[in-house]
Length: 157
Image (cartoon, rainbow, N blue to C red; front, side):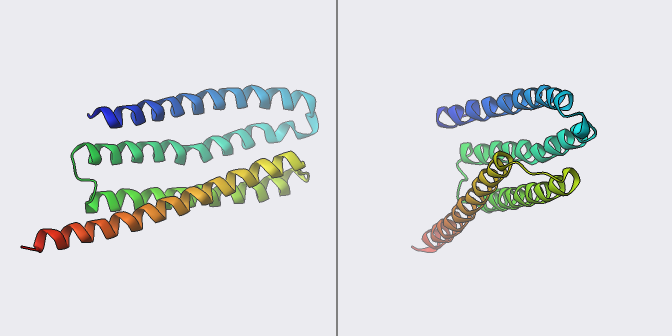
């Protein structure tokens, strides 16, 4: 493991710890919300579980980034393995964005209400996910072109 990727690995582990802490905090907030709004208490557990299921792609994406760092550590950043990893990451981010868009509609239909702050938070999440989708698609294209240039360069005498 190289020193350059070690910093990224530590940051990714910190992200996972923050996600775990956030999930615990969200559970505590859901308990308080159920006590404050008993008419919506029946939605507490399904909503919490839906959010947790929505965070699973984030955990898988972190695992995919660890795979990418392993490929980089082996000196094979411009390879088909990288393109496969970036494609999987792009599709996972797209699925994440779609899942949370459907979650917004589902929550809205089940609860019958939508506060502007919740709508704003969902919008920020969607914009961030679509931005990441675009960045990963751009990286995938850049790595594909770089791989083709590397291949052409290896064929040149």
